[in-house]
Amino acid sequence: MTTAFYTHADCQRHEMGDWHPETPLRLQAIEDQLITSRIDQFLERRDAPLAEVADIERVHTANAVALIRDNAEALALAQDNVAHYPLDGDTSINRYSWNAALRAAGAAVAATDAVIAGELENAFCSVRPPGHHATPTTPMGFCLFNNVAIAARHAMDVHGLERVAIVDFDVHHGNGTEAAFKHDPRVLMVSFFQHPFYPFSGADPAEPHILNEPLPAYTAGNVVRQLVTDKWLPALHAHQPQMIFISAGFDAHREDDMGQMALVEADYAWMTKQIMDVARQHARGRIVSCLEGGYNLSALGRSVVAHLKVLADLD
Image (cartoon, rainbow, N blue to C red; front, side, top):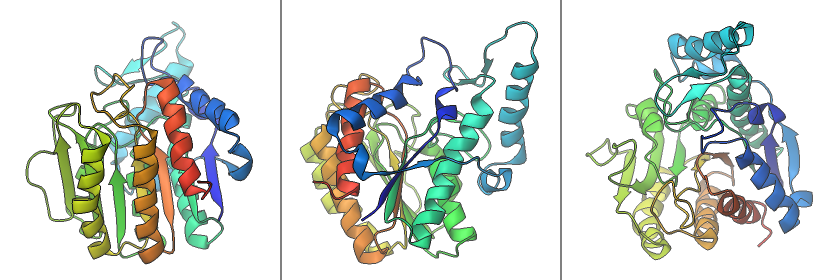
């Protein structure tokens, strides 16, 4: 089994201020835990390429793309030391954000190409900015472009896949991903998230191919495991996806104060194992996982390692 680890230094140059929890240190924390766990040697490292604008515009409008590109370029040319351009109260860009966003989306697209070509069985994209809150028209919630949605659309539109699945286990609802595919039954989206909580969506009835499972604060791993067994797995098997994409947010960890859920590393490993079993049965094992949330640096690094150990069959 070959598991690739996509990342790029450009993803650490995007930042939104020293106060911001979505920090470049997140990627360094993952790197540190890869060394500590001694699994780095078992992963195939690949540089994230720059996505083409055409890749991004399969999901996002030209205006949404221009908002990031033009303002990042303006910051690079600014003479008055302006560091950031605010997109909303929680999200901003700096002069390096355009390239970082292209690398994040480019990693997801390149991983999709390599997995479908049979070069890899699966891949993890250790990239930022994250993506699952970015709607087709609006960046929000720390997210600029929706990396997983871009990759899923690429798999269908470029490679001709007829059915894919997106699994989202971030503590926040992936509203941007749902918005991208709410009218496209080729894409099954399964998720759980803390509710009520940012972005205060996902609890209302959705289309049959959108399976949202809102959970109260302090939900622990045993409840999530039962939900996955009772709800996610039957839906995934019924859909028979030809490829699975994971919005891998680790902020439902009990040590992460961005949310108030109570998962631990073993829960992420267990979920990954269930997803892999579905992928092997229906999708030739094909999985691309992209980093979303996770803001306690130690818990993030440990959880990513737990996820990768299962993807790379090291457990």
